[in-house]
Length: 124
Image (cartoon, rainbow, N blue to C red; front, top):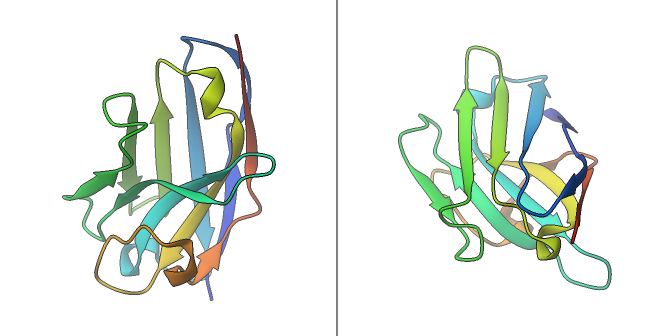
């Protein structure tokens, strides 16, 4: 079992930045591919970014590529999402997820563990 707790969300103006953190407990996060997803009201949960177990490989949704950066510190059992140049359409609840497989996958159904989410609101 892995417990995930997100933090760092909040209200920010368009063009601003936020850094989300996902702290893991229970098992070492280095055993998992880690990812961020987001869900806006009335929409399905969508993939944002993923990072391999080692941290050497990353994957991003086209909508955030060049603006968001996913990273991990396995020694601290923590994953981060640095979000720059935020847009109102980035407003959503952001979720951290862990997958015990080897691949960075984009389907939320394939992830084993989830955090409770943190709200990000970007004002125009």
